[in-house]
Image (cartoon, rainbow, N blue to C red; front, side, top):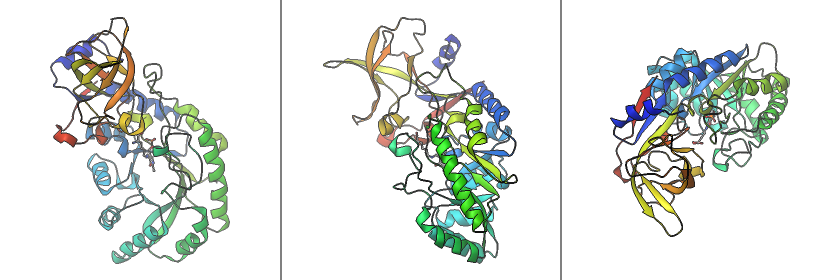
Length: 383
Ligand code: LLP
């Protein structure tokens, strides 16, 4: 929630920049910690926001790390995460990345194909060591979310499909330089309909049982991430209801008493605490609309252009003015998709006003680019 204090503080900063409310992040982390059931372990998905200041707060709260590249593994280690708290997923890990992670003795690789399993085994063999792996399984569960962030359907490239299970079992039993530790699942992101997680539990129960029958007992089950946030009303639900989320798993997941349950949450931890702060460069009359042209664009926040994602837009220079106008809010980039929102309801707005694009703490700054040779986006933290 922005107030006059913020606008005063922002006046001295060159726009655009990412603003992070570290107090809200701390509150989110403490709400998360309070709601984590015993036996459940949370890894923070670095891909959502790997800023060192954010990572250090998350590390301090006692979470582990979920990485999808060698550089993310490196960043996690630099920010204080222990090697034994790091999982490494991704369909296309390079030999260089695998070698690096083996050398760091990370907790576990989440392996996404049979060939990758053989490559990890071979690279571990060359180092004369045994590497912990979990198998990422494609559970074929619909997450009811945007098609670009759905990952658990048969048509998606992620995980190993059941038709390969027999070959998989054979490999797991014969390869000598890998150690089977767990089963990993992730069905997608920005999931608000919790029944998708209930369905996931049902599939995990079946698959876990099937592996147990094949004498491959997973020490841990990793249910991935994906919990969605309220983009429409960021101030009404600044912290997601983690309790409700974990309750689904507590209720529907059937596992052996000693099996540990892992999660990889990203968005639900960091999305709310970040906003993109921009300034109005120009107002322009269109045929049927008024344009607000900002100094931030799709290069700073790609989500609206890529997923038609909604982010709440506020004029924080006119916090107390009545909302009486509609604008198409666009960026300066030479692409028609460079639009943050159409017919956005705002107060009468002027050149120079500060605009906040809310809930941008996850998949915002990290997905920014230098397209059009834009400046590297800056970040500002405030407690
Ligand atoms: N685990 C795995 C294997 C994942 O692929 C992801 C996200 C996560 C965990 C964390 O999911 P979360 O809790 O953040 O939903 N750029 C997109 C989101 C891509 C998500 C990719 N995977 C966006 O801006 O919506």
